[in-house]
Image: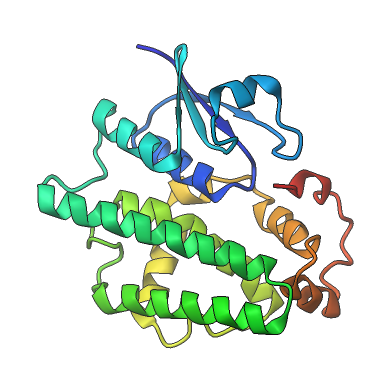
Length: 236
């Protein structure tokens, strides 16, 4: 069997999806982190969209995280999708929904002013309300069983662990099932190990280095007064 190699960036939430799935399936793999601000030629040759992650399977490359997750589902044990075709299709739909939340998060931390920041915060809050309405009281998205939807939302929730250090923006407020889901997902070993141990500080450094409204809030609180040791690693 071909050895798998995951080409990644230490802050990329889409990489975390793949890492979580590989861990849940107990699949061995190699990992190569690259600097997205200085992409090597060999990476550009195998990543037509110039994005991480890329999964190298022997001499072949697969790009886009959703495609990588589906490939792992088709080729590796311990499926994370439900067996029923309709339920499986619904999960794929919610995975796309998770990607739209990540897009809003990028818009949030890049927003240059309070008005555009608030617009993104409202959009994220509304999407979280939609999810909260369909969740149950059981720990994961589909109940007792961890699924790919959980893997997709895990890096979404990790952003909020850092956002919460900057301020209470109300996006997760009054959503009890979402909050319980966030807690259950965060406790999963595959999620905890999907990023470096100092990921929260790396992410905070990255956020504070941007010319954004969120960064100005963090700097007002003095959150940029750390040693800055990870700021150079935090470019994406």
